[in-house]
Image 1: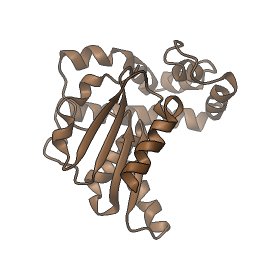
Image 2: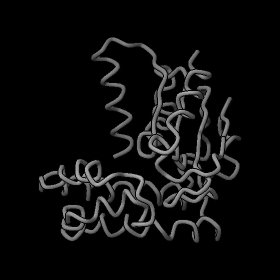
Image 3: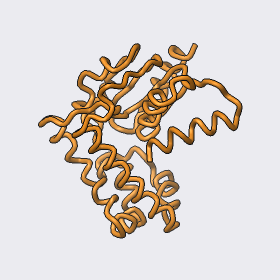
Image 4: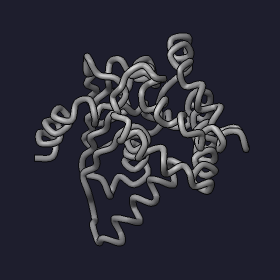
Length: 210
């Protein structure tokens, strides 16, 4: 689960004897960064996150319409069937290419991602992960589980204006939830910002972490 990812990050810092760290994360990694900063603020200096919705989204008509492309999450989370879907050779390349629309990943790169899911244990784990994701999404969107929590670490969120999977509408009022939280919507960019705009991420990292 994402909370488990955050706890794993703390365990890694402990194992490496690192008291505090700057953090960069994308998508699941970005959400993990948010949780790390909220749950373990003493371990985080600064956060640079990309295309993550954050844990304060509210369900409204704009968000509901924007989330229509996340239908795959429910499919992947379905017991038995979800693992079979993830293991289907064409699913991961289709997903990486934004529903087959954009060839951001060459065939060889897409195959690297897809090949790891020949292992049934990994397909089962992916399905379980998405089930935990849907439970957490419900807690955020319907019960506002993080409403009272504020992020103390200086944080920059870069978000592709044309993200195929996560609607920009989930970011409304996001900046109010951090002591120093800034959102930058990046035009001409979709979901895979590390592949689409690596120079931009590097530039923002140098500025934030210097």
